[in-house]
Image (tube, rainbow, N blue to C red; front, side, top):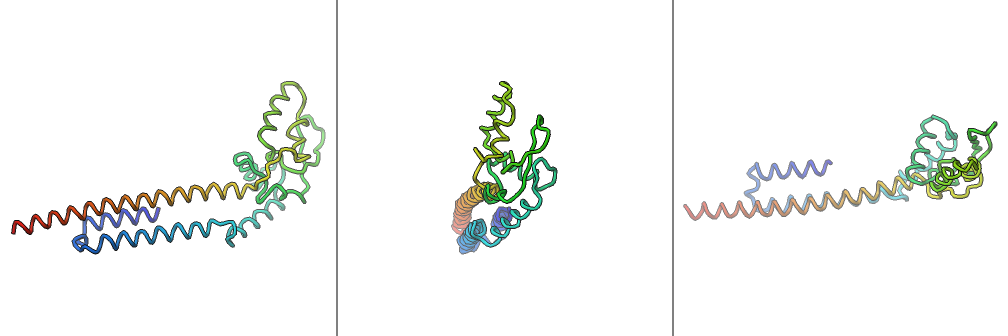
Length: 210
């Protein structure tokens, strides 16, 4: 957004202020804009790397939060956020499904009298398990044969961590955004070159009339 604003500002200045009469301004402005865009892309790619220190720190902090605060069917921020991302991104845990390995989780279906220990949150189960549950419900096979069994045994649990799913999603859109910015820079270069050529043509006409 900042780069787009700077590009628009440069175009407005180039076309309104008299600096466009200097022939060197066009290549200099385009060159500097290109350098800024390339630096932004490289910085983004370096920062948006799973090996970068900020990303490793964020993953570690979130994993600790999961281990200390997550509870099945709880309304706290960590539990709700993880469950939403798990269902949306088809993922489990922060880094991987084993984030829940040393935790004591429990869950109960409506028909259960008491909560049973499980290995993974039910939201980590593959969506096919939910489809099987819908089909099984019609046949009165119960909840235990599908999602709860998945959560207890880990059969059909997503293996990829939710942090990596979100990270890769953001990284993909950063690449797309960089491509758009490069396209806009190319478009700016073409239009400024055409405008510069028009200014030179008018200058030649005025000189010939003198």
